[in-house]
Length: 230
Image (cartoon, rainbow, N blue to C red):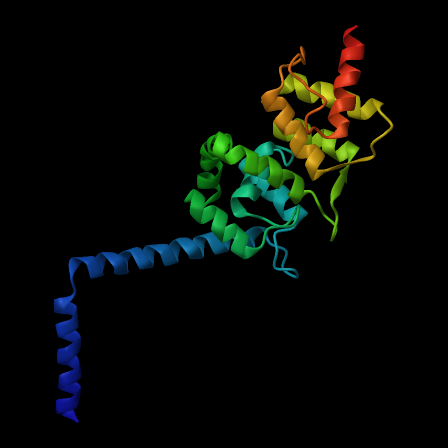
């Protein structure tokens, strides 16, 4: 029995001695990653609802208060995009982990400091179209819902696109609030307006061609703008 024990001890020592620097680095990295995940999880549970196991709207408001960011700030929507959050006003543990690991944030202080870089990341042309599309899908709160009421769209446009295209957004929001033909906006119309902002000179509108494949609502909007300019 003693020989067996001695043999095991020898194997253990041999393993320790024969560990390569790469093995030691991997082991240390794994431990650090595990600790980071633990801190991220603990932060999640400090905001999560105990019964649902989710961060709900109340938890998000508390999170915003701790980060000193208004809950209507576009950066909160950007944070949801980074997490790939599926349900408006709720974060799951997996979504939280995904987002915070990507941002390398395991404390509120680090998360707050990560917001400016997150904003820059989202505003890259390669990412912004995806974010703009995500913002619409994120606001589809009912199963099989495909459109959003005009009042909510006006607020969402202002939050998501208002800083980049203020003249176009302000004018379109004014149009939406005064017209009576549309009660809801669908994804095709939402994305069409983004294309409009990027491709059409405003307020001149000289390059707008109604014969091209624009959603009808934009034809009506352009006609409304031109009538106002007369």
